[in-house]
Image 1 (cartoon, rainbow, N blue to C red):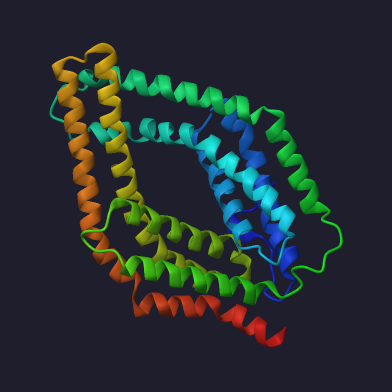
Image 2 (image 1 turned 90 degrees about the vertical axis):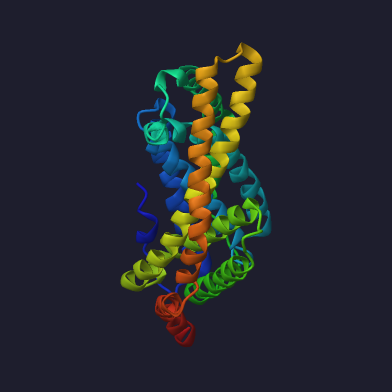
Length: 318
């Protein structure tokens, strides 16, 4: 049974490879636990949590240079990238279902005009889940998880990863924070949406590090720092969701109209829906400067310093 990512038992002074393997084994357990619910579609949260565990796994592997063998990192980085790719489409379409009522609430047209859109989105969602189910029941997936968990349990002798995990993770956190601040400071009103999307990825990577290796840090400073980071993430996430959904709906409207000549009411409703999303995107974009300034602050820097203190202490004692 997998722990919440922050609950994996770790000591800042223990050898890094053992700590990394326990973190990765916990994430693998989460993937296995969420598999049945993902296949049965009993709760969209199962696919979401499986997908998050995959992303966390990829993030930890990226930070495992010199800790895990190069061939292991290369093999499983590629395999978990595949797993991330195949879980994306179904999750993206699930989000439409989960957010639909909220999306259409501001519209002034009869919602029945959107029935062809709802039907098409559901058709695409069913197809995406069917494809995902095929992949998750495949020999490739079964072999991936079996080999991965076997290696994590019995990696064989290695001289890698003997240094204390605390100082190593602290170094990665500081580097990720510097990157996030550098990228965020470079964004202005003329920056394309892609820059904001990249900044969101940087924020996720930093949070994954802090939470996956949460056992290295004291709980109170960890929660305080994540609170600062979460506020920025929420802004960037809302911006990306609105931007991506508006683009997808434009493409969907063009495709549906070409295939079935949508009536005027449906076209008007879709136009209004895109406009709602564009307004949300613009509002989140406008709010970013304030959100980022709040993050790029002395308060956040102080929270980060308190977060990293146990790791620095471990470095002196190691």
